[in-house]
Image 1: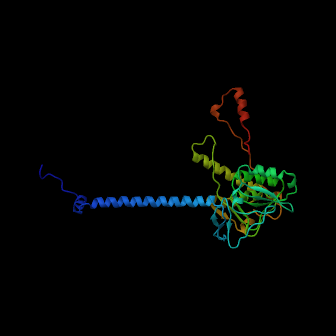
Image 2: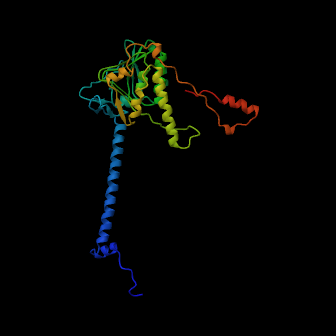
Length: 320
C-alpha cells in the first residue's frame, strides 16, 4: 500500500546521491586494478622463470664476488663456473682445453696426466660411475694415485658410487686452484684417501631433490618425493661417515635451497674433514650403512607352505 514502503537504508541513500555513472566508473576502476595486479604477478613469474632458465642453461662463466664469512650463499651454476677478479683458470692434468662453458656442461670426461694424476671434468650424469670404473680399469691408468676434479656435480647416486670406487682403489682426490666442485661433486671429493683443495677453490653444497619416483605403497607423488629425498640424504650422510668426513657437513647442504650453493670456507673444509692431507686411521672411518630387507605385500601371500617359502625368498637386500 501507498505509504508502507520501507525507507532507503544508509548505503542506498549514499548511492542515490552519487552522480550518474559513478558506480560504473568505480566498477571499471576496480576491474582495471585487478587486471594490473594479475599482469604484475604474471610478469614476476615470467621474470623468475627466465632467471631460472638463465641460471640452469648458462654455459658462460658468471662473475660472482668471492664468498666471505657470513656471506657464503651464491647461485648454483650447474653448467658453468663462477669467476671473479681474484680467480684464475684451474690447471687440469692431461687436459688443455677450456675449463668452463661446454667443458662443464658435458658429461664428465677423464684424462690421464703426469706424475700419477688424472683429471675428471664435467657433469656427473647417470652412468658416469661406470665410465669412471672403465677408465680406471684401462692399462694406462694403473698408476693413477690422484684424481683432480673440476665439476658442477649432478647425479647423487653416481657421485656416491664414484666415491666408493675411488676409495676402493686407494686414490686421493684434489680440487685444483680456482677449481669448481659443487652439488654432488663434494661427495666424490670425500672418496679420496687424502683430499686437498687448492687456492680459491670453489667447493659448495646444497639440497638434493627427487627427479622421479616409483616406490610402491606411497599415497602420492609428494610422499614419493619426500621419501626419496630422505633416503638420498641418509645415503649422503652415510657415505661421509664411511669416508671419515664429518656428516655435519650435510646440515649446510640441507639448509641451502637447490637453486643456491653454500660455498665452504677453507677453515670449514678442514673442520668438516673434507680436506685431509694425510690418510685417516681406522678410528675416523665409520661403519658402512646397514642393509635393510624388503618385504612383500602381506595381502598377496597365502598360508600354504609353497607361498611361505616364496615369502622367505622375497626378503633380500636391496641392490645398491
